[in-house]
Image 1 (cartoon, rainbow, N blue to C red):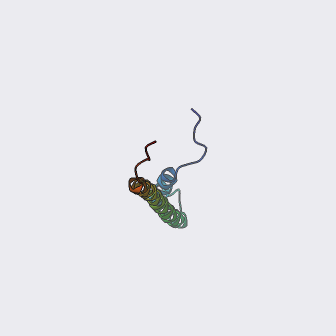
Image 2: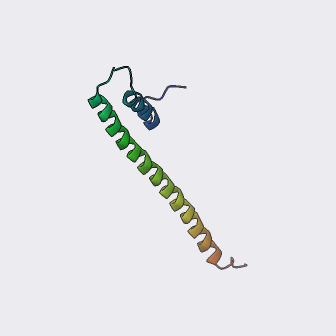
Image 3: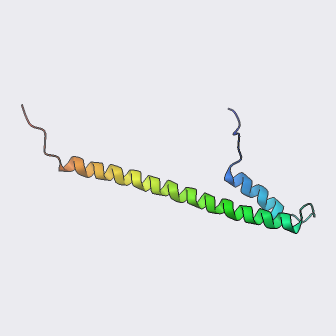
Length: 80
């Protein structure tokens, strides 16, 4: 199975967390601030995606429920 081409949001956030929590001195305070800012943006994006997925699931459920109600309201088939 081929590997995914792009990093997931979780993978990006893990990488940014490593930068933000660096104690070795490899990253400057500016780098850490940028990592924190980008992580916040990704967290908001992730939340928006989850809300959109939940709204889509609710809409699908409501659509099926409305369709079911409509089918229940139809008269029985006519006999020949």
